Length: 115
Image (cartoon, rainbow, N blue to C red; front, side, top):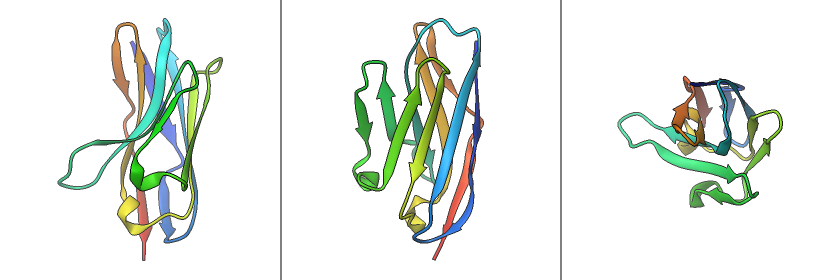
C-alpha cells in the first residue's frame, strides 16, 4: 500500500503561480511513474503531466509551456510548477503513482484561479 500526500493548492488570480508537491510513503516496492491529474466539477479526471522512471514526460496540450513536472526518484516525490494560471485551470488536482502492484491516488488538493 502506497500513500500519497499533496500540498500547495490554493486560491490565486489569473496569471499567478502555484507549486504543488506530492510525497509517496508506505510499502513502496518500485514506482514506475508519478504524475498529476485534475478534475473540474462535472468533468472527467484528466492527465495534466506524468514522468516515468526513464525521464520521459507527457503533458496535456492545455498546459504545455506553462506547467513543469519534476520528480526525485530517490525521495519518491513529484512537484508541479504551474505558471501563467488561467481560470480554466481551476480543478481538484490529484497526485498519482504507479508501481508493480497498481495505481495510487492522493486525496486531492483544490486549485482555484480567479479572473
